[in-house]
Length: 85
Image (cartoon, rainbow, N blue to C red; front, top):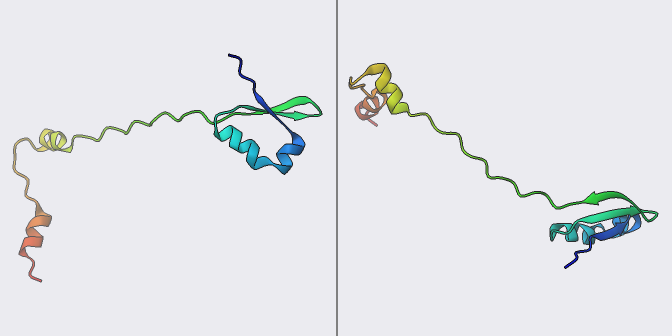
């Protein structure tokens, strides 16, 4: 099966751009013609590859490497518990 690329003239681009962009949005490639000669090609955007999220550091392992097995008091929690509203 042969697939024909759509074409649009400069005049059509000026007067009916929404139709031409509709073709592109549907996945068509459109060749823009100026006096019957191709001057541009409109293509739909490529599918964006999903970005991988950066791996979060292991804070518990880091704290254990720095402090060992010592119990570190949570000063903020202790202060909040001791504060009377």
